[in-house]
Length: 214
Image: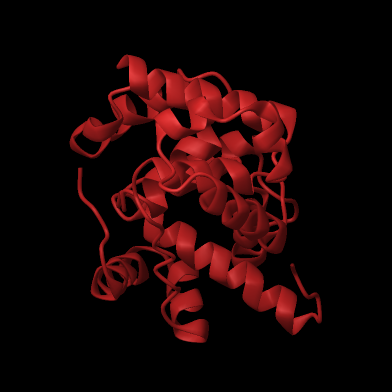
């Protein structure tokens, strides 16, 4: 799979997108390159992605800090060895504890070829992740985008991406997940750069409107 590893890759993708999509060109000319938003790969990176679901950035960071301090190093074995009380003390909910345990167990048992994900075709890697109980498409897509650096992947169910597309493209309503996935096909093979640009555009418009996000 093709990967994004640095800001030069982002700029190269932006150049391609500007040539094929007027909306991407507008975003690039207005706010410039989006941040790389690289996250650490491996088990700790996926744990962070799962932890961040449906939480503010500050809350997710607080949980991650407590978890890393209690389980150092944060490995599948360490997580499986921790009690539910220890994990709840870090701020994790019951459903997230079950997901993290399922993930750790799948890695330890070999059911999830975790260390080989970066070498697999994108659809196969994504399918392997979502087979783990509690990991849905969004989690797999975001992990692959920011921890593995996959170049051509998108997260069509992400509400901020949907809203960003609506704002950038002047759509009357926010696109559905299915509609967003279809729209994103025009940005291949740089969909992960398009996603970063839409997230950045959404944040830019909301700040301009005086809406402060967490």
